[in-house]
Length: 485
Image (cartoon, rainbow, N blue to C red; front, top):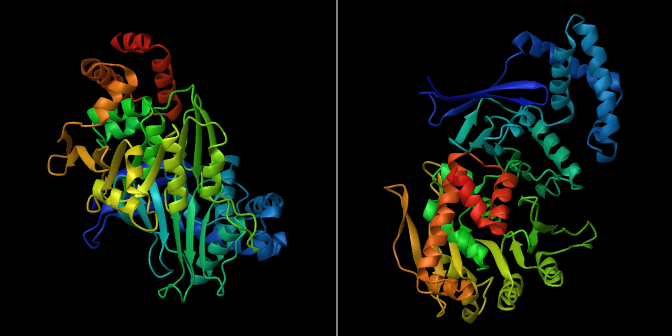
C-alpha cells in the first residue's frame, strides 16, 4: 500500500489527518480520515455518552431539526455533554474536553463525520450512495476517492437529509422524496430517498469554495496559459462581452469568477445567480443578487429573468449571470449587450461550435443576428480520466455570426497554442482603444509580466489580486516599476 498524499487540518477543535493511499485491493485511490486523539475505546465511550444525550437533555428529534430553536438546542446539548464528560472522564484537560464536545456536537446535532469532510478545503463533492457503501469524495488533486467512512443505516441518511431540508425550509418524505437546495453557506445539496434511488438513500453535497480559485492559481496549475490570460484581460478591460462554456464540473463558474477580477474599480457590476458563488475583490463596485424560489403556496418567486430585467434599471456597466438557460433570459442579455452593457455569463456546452448551436436552438433560440454581440467565447474543459481542468478554446464571434477559434489546448503537449489570427477581436480592440497593433501587443506583454509576477510571488487571494489590478488601472507605470524592482 503506497501513500500518495498526506495532510492535516482542523475541523473546529478537532485535528484531522488525511491519508490518500493506493491500495492494490481497490480500483481507485482511497481517502482515509483519522482523528489522532480518539482511540477505539474512546470512540465506544463517546458513543455511550451520545446515547445518553437525548435522555439527559430532554430534547426530542423534531426539536433538533427546528432551525428557530437551533442556538438554544446547541447550548443545552453543550451543557449536557460537558456534564457527561466530567462524569465519565473526570481527569481530562479543558483542551481535550473542548475537542470532544465539538466531536459529539457533530455526531449529535450535525452530519456526523460528514462535518469533518466539509472542512477539507481540497474536497469539491461529498457523496453518500447508501449505508452499505463507503462515502465517496471528489478531491481537487486526485479526483474521485473512496473514503473509509460509512453511514451506519438508511435511517441515519434519511435523518441527515431531513436535517438539511429543515435548514432551507424544505421537507423530504416518501411523498416528496427529492430534495435540491442551496444552504446559506453556499453548498448545494441534493438528496433522494429509497425506493426512488433503488440501492438506498443518497446525499450529494457540492461544496462552496470559501477561498476561490484565482487567476494566479490557474496559472500555477497550468489551467490557462500566460498569453491566453493576458488576451482575456485586455478583452475584459475594454468591455468586450464574453461567454464561458464547458461541461459539468469543468470549472465554468470558477473561471468566470477569475475573469471578473479584471473589472475596473470605477464601474458598477451587477451579478445574478441562483445561489451566491461569485466572490469578487472588495475594491469593486459590486451588487450581488440571488434568485428566490416560490414558497409552499407557489408565491414569492424571483426568477433569473426578473433580476436580469431589474438589473438594467440599476445603471450597470457590467452584468454577470451565473448561467443562461432559457430564451427570455438570453434575449434580455443580448438586448443589454446591444444597448452598450458588457455581459459575462456561463453556458453548458463542450466547445465553441456547440456553444453557438445551444444559443441558436431550443430552449434558448436567440436570433442568429444577435450572436455578434458576444465578442469572446471561452471553453472550460475537465479531463474525466485525470481530473485536470484546462481552458480548451478561446474564440471570437465574427460579424457574420460564425465563430473562429483563436487559441486551443493540445492534450498531448498539455499546452495552449495560437492556431488562427484574429479577424474581429484585434481590429475591435484597435477601434475601442485607438491603439495601433504594436501598442496592443505591448499592452499584452505588460499584462503577461504582471500575471507572471503574481504567479511567481504566489499572490493568490481575490482581494490582493484585485488591489494590484485596481492600482494598475489607476497608475500603470507605478505597478510595472514595482514589479521591475
